[in-house]
Image (cartoon, rainbow, N blue to C red; front, side, top):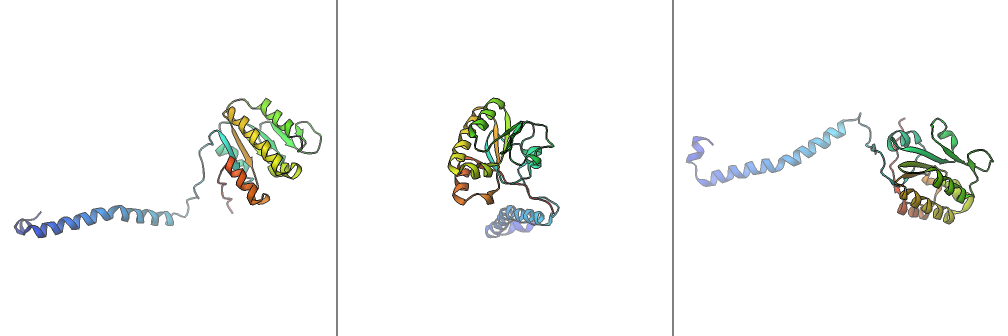
Length: 196
């Protein structure tokens, strides 16, 4: 405060306090605007994806990018798979049950839901990650209602073992009502964006 302000009446001092208050109260807004501006300029930054490993529970992963799923979201888990697209999982070293009408070792027919459930119960113990690819195929062969009931039973058994169930699903293959029922029971994982 200058010597001249000391001599000024209290009205001038009150005006200076108001100006100081205005500047201080505007600071958070200005910093927020600046932060947003800098985020827009930062074009090298990739869109934020879920990078932390999944917690135990039941999930839907609407992408065939299983490499990202396995490397980032299911890391540190003992993995097993029930798969229709076997080629997506061949490079990984974990047990898989192939859903197919072809009789082969480690394969099961899509209509034998009880055999799939038995395989899960005898294979998964504690803290596993089960990747289930082929829900659409089961729906095609069994219908939605029996498949959905099967998935709910499977989910309950996985949760009792404090493990993770991830359904790899192409959302375009399902009807809106089916997706709504699925998302009531399974949490959706945002898929990673494919780089051009």
